[in-house]
Image (cartoon, rainbow, N blue to C red; front, side, top):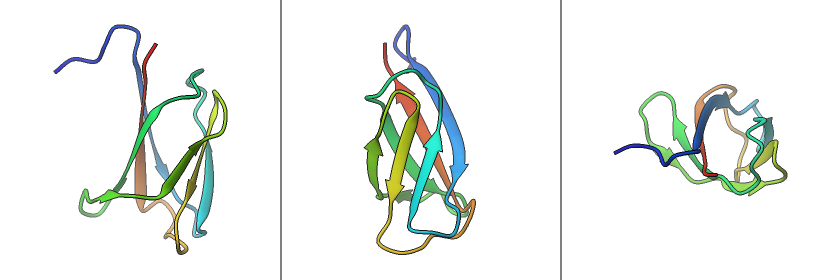
Length: 78
C-alpha cells in the first residue's frame, strides 16, 4: 500500500514517566491519525489522543508510563 499523495508520516518515541504527555510534531495538520505502540513488543496501546493544534498532540493514559517506552506514529493527509 502507498500513502496518499500529499500525506505526511511522522514518528517519535514518547512518554516521560507521567500519565500525560504532549508532543510537538510540526506536521501543519490538526486532524491526524495517531497510533501508539509499546517499543518492547510492538503492542498497540490505546491512550486518549487529543490533536491540540496543527503542531501538537496530547496523550493521556490512566497511569504513569515509563519514559521513551512508547512510539507514536502520525499520518497527516492533505
